[in-house]
Image 1 (cartoon, rainbow, N blue to C red):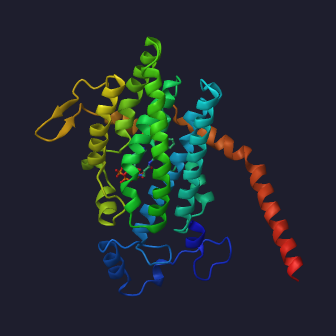
Image 2 (cartoon, helix red, strand yellow):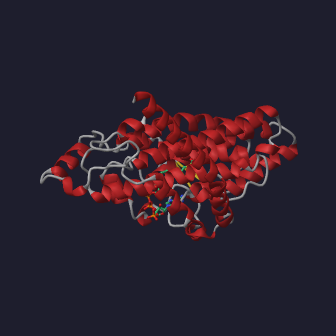
Image 3 (cartoon, protein in one colour):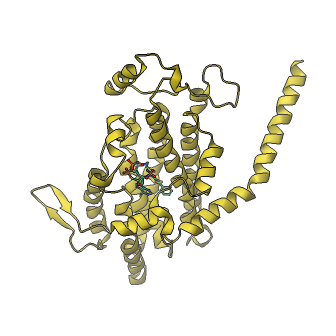
Length: 337
Ligand code: BYC
């Protein structure tokens, strides 16, 4: 779907072109504000403020990197899935995450930033990816917890992004959310099977919930008071719902699911507040969050090293694809002559 958006005026095939800021006429900014206020999509060929472009590239590339790095903790369990069916499902899910990364890199490319630039920023440690993928996957129940909780949190965060003001990002999110919903169900299904199984299996499910709960609650980002980007991203219609509101929605939706599984959420302060109509929760360990975001979580180094290794090992594939494309172009040119 993005190849159409990439087809910008005066561009050569394969060349990234975005309308430069200095192409703006005097009233371009007013037209941009009007468009956003009227909830009409901003498209790649439209004029946009530089700060809007930069913030989109930051968020979309961070999101794309999260999808791709997010393949690693699950990839760790493909060979150890307990049945052929579970293996096939897990493989399909991981493959979906790679696809999500691809849609998102393509959406960011429409803003004039190449995939090579984004990947170089990830590999040099400059670009972020979601904190959640820096935690280890120790047992099969972690595959259930990731699907149920991590994908569950991702859906909560991503559904509002389907209404994001930037067209290519919003359209990518629609497809991604459909797939995430399947991912969430497969995770819950793993948890349900374990909770209906032997006492050891149920204990494994509880242990996974104990380890993943707080990192997932943190996934929504810093509290609203500390969210440096929210004011702008909300004004521009990129973000529609704040970090804390999404976190609360996630907790409210997940508590009954844990009850159905017969599992205990590891938060002694978690209780229904009838006055607010929401669950109250205990304090979040923001030191742990920032430690992980800043590169010092349990698996940050391992994850980045695995990505860099995979990229280097894939060099020959990229070279072969480019060589093949060049030969095909030459053949087509010869045939046309
Ligand atoms: N981890 O001002 P704030 C998936 C950073 S993958 C790391 O609130 P913003 C899946 C933030 O970037 C789903 N960093 O920022 C895949 C900023 O730093 P910079 C991933 C975080 O952008 C495989 C600083 O903290 N989802 O579902 O307004 C298998 C201040 O934050 C995090 C997305 O990427 C974090 N958790 O709001 C299974 C969704 N949180 O950039 C599942 C798209 C915050 O200034 N992204 N930071 O250096 C967003 O919605 C927003 O970017 C966030 C943060 C809500 C994450």
